[in-house]
Amino acid sequence: MLPKKYIKRIDDFLKRMDMEYQDIRFELVDHLATDIEAQTTDYDEFFKKDLMRGKFLRYMLSKKADLETQYDKLNRKKFFNDAKNIGMSVLKLLLNPKIIFAVIALYYIAYKAIQYNPKITTISLFFLHLFILIVISVYFFYEYKKIGKVKIIHSYSYLLLILYFIFGNYPNIKSVFNPDYQTNGIVIYKITGIILTLLIFYDYLVKRKQFKKQYKHLLI
Image (cartoon, rainbow, N blue to C red; front, side, top):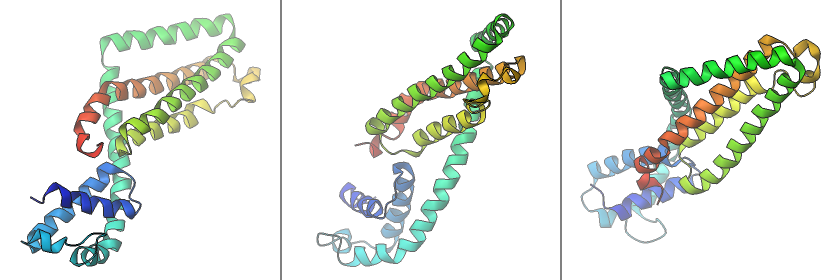
């Protein structure tokens, strides 16, 4: 096992290569550390001198193109894996009896509201969804500073943004005032977007402590 000071040296080099997400970078650090352990026994000699000169620098430069390619592939793969896992978590939440009751209640309230005043109901839901997105965006803005650049956290925020583009922008801010869009179908559509947004955000809040513990070694 490489000493921590050399693990940090490898990570510092990857950071200089603009590899942003810490959890993906750590996977590459582990790969490189294993490779270095397999080919050398004198770590002090391999990592000698400051400013990353000598054998270590030559080795890292020889791996640069391969590491950048691996990082890009891991980055793309990680988002889709995260999205799948978040989707499964939200599905489990939807099977919770309390959440099922809350969802049914929201649909019922929305249905009654549009029967009473379709215009106010549609416009209110549009701006409610926008308000929720703004609040969550501000939350994640400060969360990035606290937790750092861990990919799973960004995956949550990206998914929430995608959801808003799907459910929040139709009808858009102009057409929402058009009576043709103030229908039962549109209200159900808007409520669905709001519910999914809240469930994804709730799933993140539940798992936040787990992420901090899981990636503790990356957040120092």
